[in-house]
Amino acid sequence: MNNLGNAFLLMRNYREAKKAYKISAYDGEDSSSVLSNLGASYMALQNYDFALKALDRALSIERNQTESLFLTGLVYEGKADIVNAIKHFERAIKSD
Image 1 (spheres, rainbow, N blue to C red):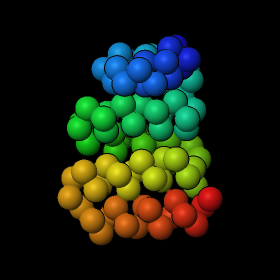
Image 2: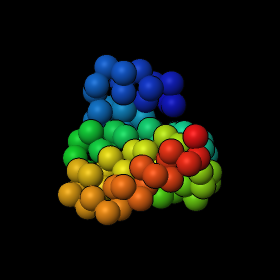
Image 3: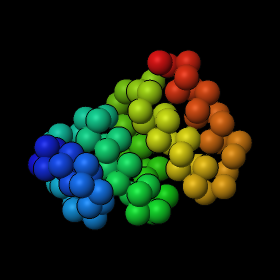
């Protein structure tokens, strides 16, 4: 399901990507990359609260994952929370 989610994400079919990543996450593929991609899908759908939940779970698995930190910054930017956006962008830069 993770590969299917990746394909949908590349096609910008975010709703289907979200479904595939959710299945992957709940079928035991609770990896930081699956959760990060799930967060990216939610973010593309402007569902920022669910995006943050998925990204927080990804960061609980891999605390300094650059992609999850950067995406979290983008989510906060989308929510117009510039302080938290900058905080996560800076963490992403330091972790890279």
